[in-house]
Length: 468
Image (cartoon, rainbow, N blue to C red; front, side, top):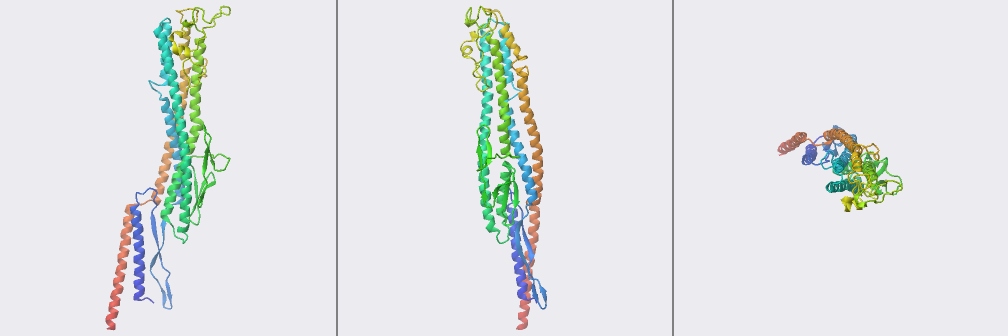
């Protein structure tokens, strides 16, 4: 049967419950802009009733738990789409850097440098005996070689920077694994009584969210509150223990689980994008550039060595018995036949007068070699496509095509990730308007509980007045 004491007890539990609900609501409002914070709700439930011969009487309300509103399925979807978005964004940014290395179209790019080089040979063909024209050819050849060197060195620097970023990614992954395992270790005792450690779960989710930007992970919730984080189906974090990743290889790095001989095959994330760029795009761009430089060097040298160099003298190294074979003067150094090492031959670098313009012994007015070399602008036997300009344009088109495709893919994935994040935020985020409404509701319930106490006091006073 009810009593004044039971009325006061019910009012007291109601006040405590509503106070907890107000505290929780205030906590939500305070963290409305905190990244990764999940809205919390005080779960209220009627206390076990009091059973008496006169009937069953309620004993008020209590707080069962304070639970997070995070939806595991929406969270995993946000991570999956976020992994794809981060990976394609990283690829887009890196390919944009590759594209900027070549900087085409440009008045100072390699294509303009080759045009200036061919133009210098055309000018020499128009004035084969002009020393100034030879100096121009020398300078344009040196400038072209330096342009090749610059582009190749920039690609090398980009490769080195990307390898550094890969190493940093692996270090960060290992740090996150350690921190997630440590947070699991904190959550286990905190939830041993059946209550949810919401703030610790949020801290762990933030760590897993960051991890998912680097590598694709799947999360499995355990009944004890800890998480298992899977990478390629293998546990990266299991309870309070984690596995480290190792990085090996120099030119094309490989990532493995520590102690495993099998390389990880990643399917998304920033780390995978950087590894792919290092393994395919950058080596391909460098190889194409080296092929262009090598073909240009061999094509120009083949013609130049068959010409007559004024500094070779009247006979030079021509063989009177075998017929004219040229002075044998190399224009470019054939031992430095890569874009990074390309340079003029020692003879041409030290003396512009050694540059051949004709193919006849002591033929000071002959311009056939200069004409033939200038014709390499459009027809180059040593180029796989028959033209150095076309070969370079194909290289640029390949880089630009890959960059454009990466940009389009990044845009799509960014949109998908944004939608997934919005859905998660809608389900688990804090709406200050809704929290203010809840605050008013709990405040009114608290105030009503105080009225119950006032009523109980009035009943008590009335009872005391009767006894007097």
